[in-house]
Image (tube, rainbow, N blue to C red):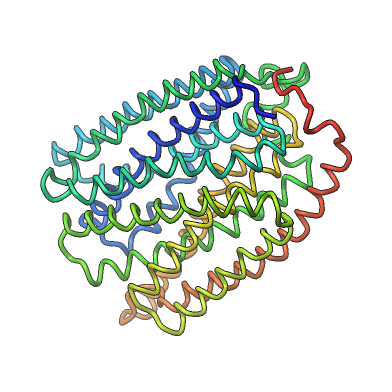
Amino acid sequence: MFPKRIIYAAFAIAFAASFLLCGYEFIRAVSKSLFIEAYSAKNLPFAWTAVIPCLILFLYIYGRLLSAHGATRTLAITSVLSGALIFACYISLINNIKITAAFIVIFREVYIVIIIEQYWSFVNSTLTEKQAKIINGPFCAIASVGSVVGGLLVGRWAESMGTETLLVFAAASLLPAAFFGVMAYRFAGEPKPSIAEEGGRRGHLGVKTLFSSRYLILLGILILCTQLISTVLDLRFDLLIEKELTETDTRTAYFGNFYAGLGAISALLQLIVVPFALSFVSLRIIHAGIPVIHLINGLVLTLNPSLRTGGTAFLTFKALDYSLFRAGKELFYMPLTYDERYRAKQLIDSFGYRFGKGGSAGVISLINLGLIVFARNVRSVPGAALSISAMVASCIWGGVVSNLTLQYQKLVQTDKNLDNKNPLV
């Protein structure tokens, strides 16, 4: 069932993800803490909105690289360049260039999705559906080990080494991530596009591929719903932290410990729950149950707002997003073509994730500006509005995923050779 080359490739790409996420914990905690110190948490939506044009630029660069150099070299180039940019941000910060605190929040949202989605494109192109149901959970778990280690190190080192210094570790992590990513392709081989897809003939970004498929459009809507929930819960959580933790390094340490706990919980779900659920529970039931959980957490946060309920709602969302939802969602891509897996997927899962976050953040920013202008005694969007927004998005999520799972089942039924496909042809 698992040829040796597939096992070696799976471990290599999992190690790459582990190093990537370890470094991401450094940049996530650092960027949040520095931005709050420089501009305050209420202005985070403005930074998230700015992610959208930056991501479009980087996705175009990614598409051109993929067309010119193929998947292996594109992964190596995007990884090394991201590390170089993060190190440049460190140099800028120690020279007291304040705007870097905003740029690093924006860039961290861009590089992580572009690289991690390349890992998943590789996985979806290499494994069969049956293999994926077993491997996807442990793959996520190995990746989460890096996340846990990174979070713990941030919690331990932030106050002793200083917040800015931690960016060096984030930059360095991308070198082993690039190495193991390339090794994964060496073991499994590089997936090849069809003649009609070679050289980006259907478009470097994959826009034409995306909008020619109702199935892919539904996937995009699903991602927008999830990221609206992520954004409002993240902002609510940050506002509650800003209120209770006022010292920069202490706040950075708290973020590090929080995300280490998140990584540990995610790893347990990935190792124990995901393989069992994907193998024995209907995918339709799995995907329908997740938004119900978020609906309940949103209700609790609305009725009883506190750092504890805010942290619980955000942690639950992220833990499920990193484990059961992610592993189950990736199955949706397995019956698809090269361009759908490598180009349209980037639009959906990179741009869609950040557009959902940036777009909803933009709406929040406009509301904030309106409140400041027309109701000067109100400083920001009321917390209850954020948690209620999460509840509404959860309901929409449930309806979309019901339709999507039906279409997925039809695709699998019409693709009789899915489990025996040769992904390298």
